[in-house]
Length: 229
Image 1 (cartoon, rainbow, N blue to C red):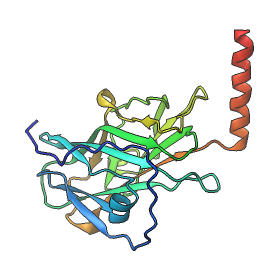
Image 2 (spheres, rainbow, N blue to C red):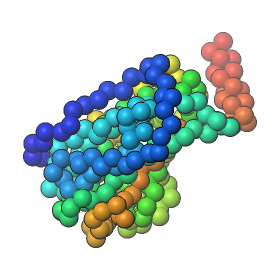
Image 3 (cartoon, rainbow, N blue to C red):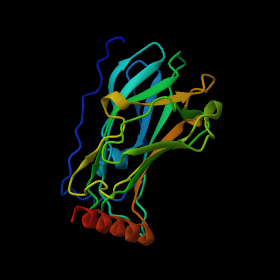
């Protein structure tokens, strides 16, 4: 892996910041060092709501750029749904680097709501997840890939689900999918073109359980307590 300068690591913290400015979003193209790739993030998300940190580049291998992503979800769910956070990736020049590896991702939950699932979804057939890379689920321990509609028949969804009813606490806790040893690899079409017309998105969103699921979790918790007694 060759050396790279990166753009500085931003650690996202929960705060009382409130965005009161309403402006039309403008895409900001952020080169991922000299990999030939760039991350594209709306300026409102990047600078106003402080939901996404500038991607940090760990390094570049022969066929991959290795990055860290930092995100913060601030808004509570509306009608049971959270607003997703989307980062797009595009080639800004042709290279032999066809993989994007997320070696570490820090996602702060400042929504006031507990999460029981978290999903990563690739939004274009230019890319797919490499299912041989099984990331660490951290608090959400059940990890699975689904929807094989991506490049070369690869899955486009990566799901983290709660098995024991603990969820991810909402009081500023940080969820870390793909932490260190459990990195996430995105494989892209080597024939993918250069420029904005060939972007693909990485959409991420937590979910909350439906009322019926909450009831089952409650019953499960009571059963555990009865066993202990």
